[in-house]
Length: 615
Image 1 (cartoon, rainbow, N blue to C red):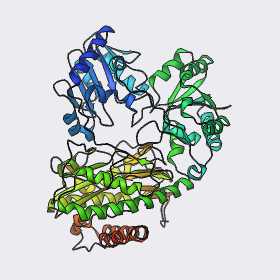
Image 2 (cartoon, helix red, strand yellow):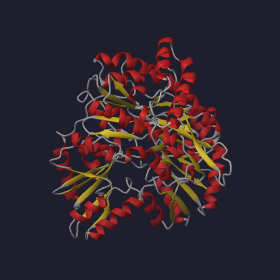
Image 3 (cartoon, helix red, strand yellow):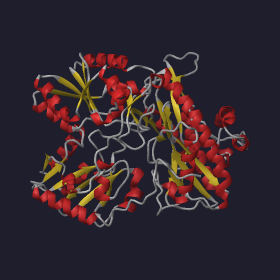
Image 4 (cartoon, rainbow, N blue to C red):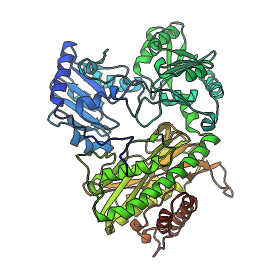
């Protein structure tokens, strides 16, 4: 197998550099008369994946996870992460300098109240926080008798001498054959929403929304085809797109100029201030708009209107072209996965495979489709205890051989022009233990409960999240992450505003694509996760129904390891679903793969014969 092209396995260990960097930051804060400073993992757009030039938290602390925040005071420092990263953070961060705290159980506001003294001044970069986030932090500071102070330029940037240059990825046009709706029509819908909101203009601060609106894609961040750009869409007149001109080839520039006013990003703040000075009401996305934007508009005399960006919901509800593209992408991706799983089944029992070998092989199978543009996130490939680390990323120093008797968890996805994929499979290498089979089956029961759910129009993700947990809860088990997230159409693999989680308060609408990924993780032993992507569709008619009903269509097509199933724990209906799913996998994917893979797939998708059924 060839080497991985879209991801590396380099060790990222910053602990040796951490003491000097934290000392330099403290000296810079003293020079600015600040008691401390907040360092979030964020850029100006609140992206999940950041360009190297914005990885301030990783540079300062060594922590490379996708969510976190540090607070550095003169005599102490803390780093906050969520449940996905409680193991990773301790492996990466110097605990002699940073105390590790749980982002949910002990949030930054709680820590601030307990650790800031009266009269303290805690600095923050207003471009890296939302206004809602800052209000919570400011309230905590006030409770401690301290003050939250905006400070520019960012003090981390002042000491980061070898900071990478900002990205200049080329902007590309996203063809109508993939987008399904031209930009002019989208802008018409957006303007109608702006009028409903009684606003004069919408500030588009989420690059995913910028890309969707103007049917463009970029290359500024890893694994998501995003251009880092802002836009302003007024209720009347042409929108303004703030994008570095060096990213625009002549044909792209000409196509965009027919639709928008192309502006240099350096003009963005001044244009906001000018609109504010004219007394305009400007809609800001409460999820991604930097606190700096609200301040610019307010100080100029305008009215920032915080709320949901209406583009987010439009983008989340895929049109027929995008849905057809997603189905095609999943067939292509499913064939690559089948080839990989067959190869893994032949090779892993020999005991020679490493985690890195599997990541490189899987990416190679996807590249051989001829359609892969990128992976949709760094592949998670965890053998044995590494599988218990929810967002594990293998490096040369952590790389393990996959041993017989272990479980192997692989979570991966591809970016194709017609769709974005995300799939997790847990595979038995050798003979699994009875405990592994029982817990895998309980995770599978939760997966099937989501896949087969029928729910009224207007149901939120929070209302069905518990479906995935019932079989685990029954024996005192659970998992510390959401059951599902939205997925973009050749955009981010993690897309709002809807999700299936305890915090998923947005109604699930037909046309949305989400993940269905319950799991179970036994620390230092193994991890289990089963993930398919699902499409919200109209449910089959139900006699006597008084409300419109929705259901899920499973898009992902790849076998679920039958060797890990304990049939006695499954109901007849669950076995029937699994057998029908596997029959569909073989019917659709079988003709797309080579003869040896097809033979393997036929065995892997055989029906499950229940010994007995139990609720």
